[in-house]
Image (cartoon, one colour):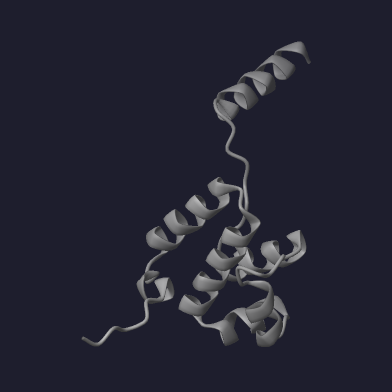
Length: 109
């Protein structure tokens, strides 16, 4: 029997799949898992392309975006921007609270 290696990057072929995969990694709170997930997406999108977009070397990205890597927040933000995304908070009910605060402050003025 012949076994082939499995690389999740081979299956991250659309934005919905990438978003779901990264969401799961971030929700885990595990830095190693987040770094590895960012690395998988970078491989799927093309490491050279991501390196050019971030201004970081391919070697640095491979090293940092691995399960052993510990990317700094600045690196995560650059990489997410290179993917065409970013980070945002997702607090329960936050949209309704912001809207009601704005309308209250407008009424007070």
